[in-house]
Image (cartoon, rainbow, N blue to C red; front, side, top):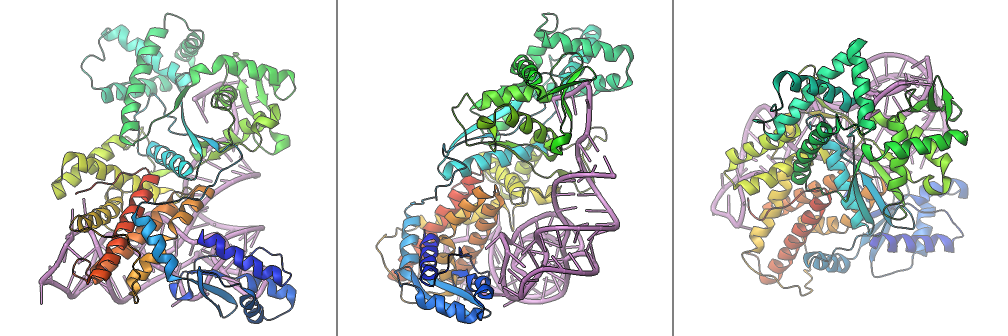
Length: 564
RNA sequence: GCCCUCGUAGCUUAACGGAUAAAGCACUGGUCUUCGGAACCAGUGAUAGGGGUUCGAUUCCUCUCGGGGGCACCA
């Protein structure tokens, strides 16, 4: 809002000078340089063949005065710096304190509806700390776009059919033959999934060795696709286990999906679409398989239907896209929050979809990839037995909190989720996370609990008295108070930017900065013991800080608590 | 071999092409007659290397080195 007003004013001044160039407007790193700063004079001075300082002065002369801009100054080598009027800062502070937060509308198209597809677990594996990343990012992206005025559909795609399932069930059948039907009887849900994972890797080993075992696995795979009653009950039973297991994890991460898609829904239609694409000459036959030849587009060649006539992941993806782009009406965008290893896969399937139906898909599919979560000691691999489970991390984190602070179980749970989520989301998407236990459950410094602590601290002060929302303007305010005021108006800008650039970490960085500013203020100035006018002003600052932290954390998928 | 990514203090990370490269952890030293010390203050310490574009480069281009991922019947 402020930002747009200043931009307009600046643009009007430029127009008066006959300049059409769009000006930039940023927050100077150093607040001595004002609230906003533009380097437009530096950019256009060369074409104008004038000194940047002179150009800047001329622009400033042409600025129309308004009630937002207190002053505009030119600084070497040609920056124009703007200071916002205190009255605006005060009124915004009051709005925030009353919970009035208006996010800028921002959408990815006309429809204002986007699908975020994330989580996509491998049903036969324990959920490890790497999987947590897609879950956290996806939920945060969903919340950010909702805040920016979009309808968001949360979708999840589960791999419940395919060779990996066949490998597991083949081995499972062997075990049942040896030990009887009661293998799962004494196990917890987690142990059951762990057992399936073990069966999978044993099956996988047999498959890689080739020979009779491999043939049998391929046969099991075919039987599942054909809905053969000999294997289906076992398939259904294990599938159910996996769904229950993952549901528990989603719940703990405060995620609820609008739609769970399953690969097993896709194979028939996937084959049909692939066949049609073959007839249209989009796909081609090669060595008995149906493939997309990506060479002419500079991308990889990948198989859609294998030589046995079964659809691959690619083939099934075509059916998935069709469902995703029809079940919820038209979409602006479908964001697939998936790891970088799928990048080639998405490039190819997106291209095929685009050729099949440009109107429906062009520019609407997006692979939002993120870096790996690795251990400081190296990569996780089940073979090395150094896989860290997501739930273990959450539980351990909670345990540490309970032991250190003796808080209630429910509070510890919230704080544990906050600690772990925040430690992931404060990183940019593309960077790898070098996982470190102490770091990820950090309770101090730049951490989730620090932010919540700051929030609780605010609440604690506010609970001791009441404040009026009357518009009192303090004549002289301290640097610490001003720093807070100047942070407030940036919040909605940061949220918008986080959406535009798909970067939840911008919100994390902002919140930490805000919390630091509040704590510095808190350290230096008395709130409750100040004179009435000052006290009321400081209470409003406190209230607004709490509100912004709460809203910001919500956008990261983190709950606040009232006491800790 | 080709494609995609990443390389910033001892460690983990910020920085929309802008002003003195910003924090957290760790380490050293400090703040308590305090509204919540899960806090605050101070100090040490960094852009992998070479070219280029620009008034200005951590950011863009290029080469080199180094890490990670991917490249046909797995998902």
